[in-house]
Image 1 (cartoon, rainbow, N blue to C red):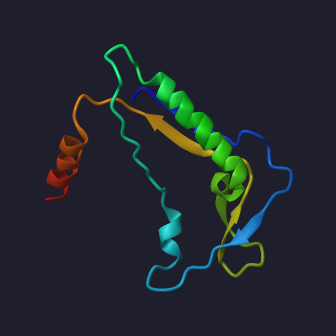
Image 2 (image 1 turned 90 degrees about the vertical axis):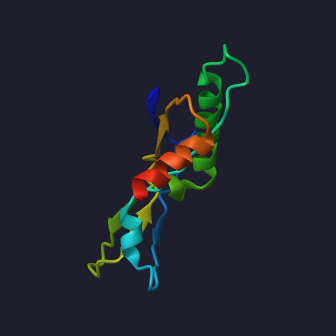
Length: 118
């Protein structure tokens, strides 16, 4: 792991948004109690490239996207009306970004996951 970052919106959100999460069966609201993991895989352009330039670009792009979609930088909570339903609150918490480096191809990485599941 090269870096563990918290990426917050590029600008603070003036108005705090709250949206109720509606989940219909068979999915249910349990799916929202987990983290969403996204893998962005790239190959360095040259041997001298550390990848930090690309990671900085990814962080800046994510910060701008969080400004445009403030609910993505929010957190889930139980509704205040006591019915137990989940809602998203845009509180500028941001998102976690983990930068890691591996000396294998994407195909080799995916094969590792398949072997674990077998």
